[in-house]
Image (cartoon, rainbow, N blue to C red; front, side, top):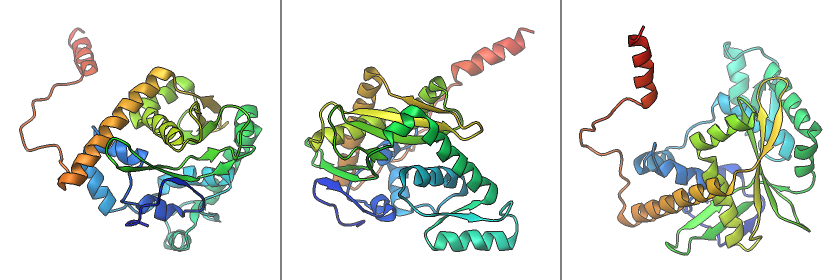
Length: 281
């Protein structure tokens, strides 16, 4: 699939590894990687050199699998840590079989997190009826670039407004802190990207994008959040810029980095304030 771009449409059952290996279309995460603080050179290198699975992502993957019902199987390894050779061999064997290995305590935590979501009245209702991880492909009208996204959850049919649901595990489910995470990780771009894909495929022209956010520490609090109109507009503008950058790089074959000039930099404002406070004592 890395060299084969599907036609426009909605696809079921594309394996994770094939979806993420697709170099013929641009995803939301790829679009964000093209823009600062990253650059096209880093985007291109990561496409050509995919990273191996990391332990720190396993918990999020496990909760997704337990809540959504799709994804790599989660395997409980009865060890307290990965420090011993035997434990690492069990972990690596599980990965080789396409599973997500978790230490016993982490597995129990993932189960508790999934149960917490099921007890949350709004989050549970959002995941009540729908299809997980369908792959959407559509073509950008301005550049001809094929775009893609993979919503965590879409209802199979609707009588009202289409709700696109995305599950995030985070250090905190506090809405104000999650707003900062949106700015840091570009989740406003993700939401706008998915909504535009749904509109382009004529699935809905008034869909809403909801983040179900869960804390990774007890009591595993859950909140449901929706970005405001202004944030989505900003994300959409950044996406437009990223698509144009991608199209230009594909056409030219040049994926620029940070440049070769000497950069004059300045400390951030908070560092100046902090230093002045120290000097005023």
